[in-house]
Length: 271
Image (cartoon, rainbow, N blue to C red; front, side, top):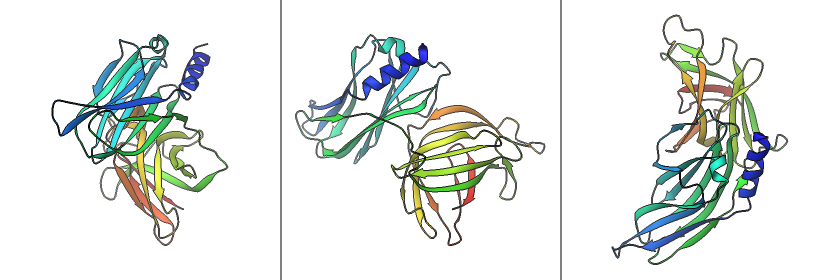
């Protein structure tokens, strides 16, 4: 019953627009960008930092990014049970100078489903007075038959420039998938592949090209066993990326590539 409730609630959110407004502060040069979203009064609002998803399946994270001339992030953490009470709350980004051009992005995460929903708003300019933009959330749904590129990869954790320890176990292999909707996923394992990174991509996934990855969610690594006797590095918690960075992946003329994820894993493969 818990799984059915969670799915029904989030699907209802896809039809619910998020409202942003910008109101004039005391300064003639600055305004505040506000997001109103339904959540319970007990929800906690915090400044951005990469965060481990709670192991409770009843917890949801709503992460809001402001991008462009200004880079800001805030999030709300709440439970689906509390969310059912449906109280409006507002996330406000204070002291944004008028005339700045920004875009807004919202994402929903949970322990049970990982990265669930994403919505974006096109760029707009902060003006004095009230500015409003709506975001429609859409589910993160990778279509297996609609790949832009796939590659077999291996994943390791480098102790030195010449010595690396594989993830999961000694024979760990994986898949690097880029779909035509602009999402990527990296999964590794021996029998059942386990996702270690998801996000968006752009660029040219071809020999001699360059692709740019932005991670949204990843698995942290258990590095407590690192040492001369380490045989593998285990996967630990699921982490939401709130301070996003682009990873440039250069594909050589022979199709080979190598790059490092935020969790420290080094991914190598051939396209």
